[in-house]
Structure formats: C-alpha cells, structure tokens
Length: 283
Image 1 (tube, rainbow, N blue to C red):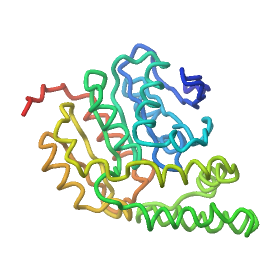
Image 2: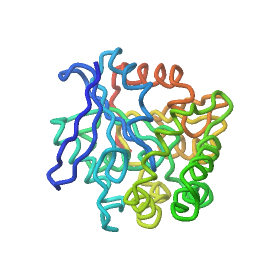
Image 3: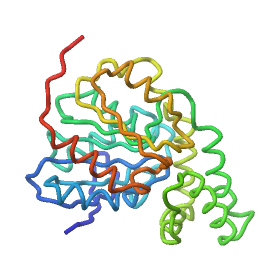
C-alpha cells in the first residue's frame, strides 16, 4: 500500500514523497523531469514494490506538492544535485538505485558521479543532457503557462492539452485526468517561475563535456522511438561514452515513455535492477 508524506529537508525545503514497499527492501528513487511530479510514476511505483523494491517517487523542489523557492541559485545543476542528496539523507538511504526522467536524467547521473558509492544502479528515461534540445519544446510548454492573464483557464487548459499530447507517441493519448494533473500546478505562479528559472539556470547540456565516461555503476537508458525531445543519436553517444550501458527502445512511444508503455518499462527496469551487479573496471 502506498503512502504519501511531506518531508522537510535540512535546507528547510519541504518535498512531497510517494512510497510503496517494505522499508528494508532495496530502494529505488524515481525523479520526474521538468514540469513533472510523482504522478508521472503512478504506473511504476506499484510494479517496483510488487517486485520486492522500496519504490519512492519524489516531487523535486519547484514541482508538484514540494516547496517552490524562487531564488535563481535554487535551480542550477549543483543546487538540484544537492537537493537530491538531501532527499536521500532524510529518507535514510545510504545506497539506492535512481530513476531519472528527462531533466532528472542528468541530475541523477550527476548525483551518481558525485557519490558512486551511494548509487547501486542508474536508470535514465528519455534523458536530456546532450546538446540543447530544449528551447523549441520548452517554448511550446511555457506559452500556455505564461498566458494566465491573457486567456481564461479553460483556454489555457486546451493549449496545455495540445502540448502534452505532442509529447506522447502513437501508443496512447493522455486522459482528461492526466491533463488535469499536469495542468493543475500551472495555476500556481511560483510553479511557473520555477520552470522559468530552470530554463535559464539549469545545465541542460551537462553530458557534452564527456563526464559520463567516469560512470562506474550499471546504466540502463530507455527511450521511445517517437520521442520528440530526445533524438535517437543520444543513444549512440551513451554507448560511445558508457560502453557498459544497456538500452531499451520502445516502439511508437514518445517522451513520457514510463506512462505511455508502463508494462514494457516496468519489465525492463525490474529485470535490470534484479540482475546481479557486475563490477565495472576502471579505465
């Protein structure tokens, strides 16, 4: 049975957390991407718990039920990485596997690089991080969010619905409840400001410097073949820089692959996390 809670970090920021599974089981912490919340992992947390893991989905600061500090310094890469460490500490996790979606992909990877002894395995879902793939897509999302005074709520919701649908592939379409869940935070001006600060102060191309070559934990990358945000060429970059990485491509899925093809994604993640960990030699 899942439980939700608000946890206060040592910085004073409060975060929303969804947990399911036994406290002593191997932990898996799921981090949603830009604009997302723990709702993104609604199909994944129960499956991970049923497979014997302690599954945890977190609303990163600025998102979902979590606090939304407004300082520009709160949304740099370093600040977001430190934020995740605070979350792991308050959860009492000395070691965990991480699942990072989209923007949370490079955050999770940087957490791993900063403290590889604390990360068992790393899963990246449609990760950004190579090149600046964001501007056009982000502009499409921010347009309806920024029109709070120019358009009535229903009109903005309609625009937002079109944007969310454009992130999907050909497998499914978002339900009206899905649209409501994703649109609801946009009525909070602090949420919109947080997204703006991430756009301007987060390092969206953090992988370009080759830092992933230092990764020494098992890595699984999952991408939908119809992802409009992350180009297919990203997979070859991962393979070149992280030879021990594994890849799963989901036919006809888009950027929100974990909710478009949950059964396939869950199977891939559970198999990956359940497999014996083989030591990865240093270069």
